[in-house]
Image (tube, rainbow, N blue to C red):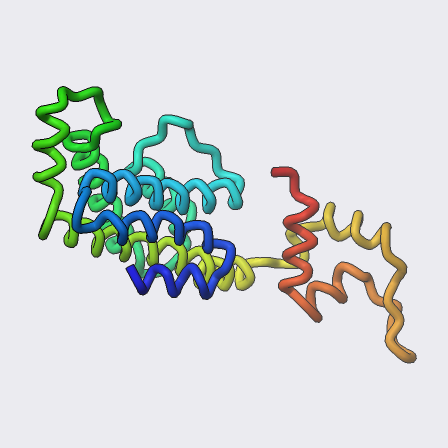
Length: 207
């Protein structure tokens, strides 16, 4: 899962996911069920992180397809990704079904079945699953880190946040630039550094 590891290193907030990657790579050829469980946890972690940061609620018992669907829908404003998102949701659904069928922690199973299922989740099945899950993880992280912020910045309008602008201006003195001004602090921040404005706006919004 080198491509996913590179994405995690590029966007360091996702570095904790490397623990899942390490487990997957360690047990890829010896315990497909353990690999399956870590793939499930990896996708759940990504989806729940994105949803929490965007203020979207989810239930503790939310299924993997449900989490992926909700995460993609939250970012549905992105162009030309709806078909791709649906494909990944299908992958997530199959992962959930696969996990419920074979994973040891899905349901209590007799020892005989534990051993049999471990042998079934090997070889080509594991490699296909890993490739699919890696691409799903890369898609979700990359969209959230690179495409979604660009969209929100394009859509951000100064006049849509009058309450924040007023509160911000009440806390900071008006801006004077040489013989020009005075300017509203919130307006100056918006047009000089939209990213900083967005950061202040988010910080003022209750989660």
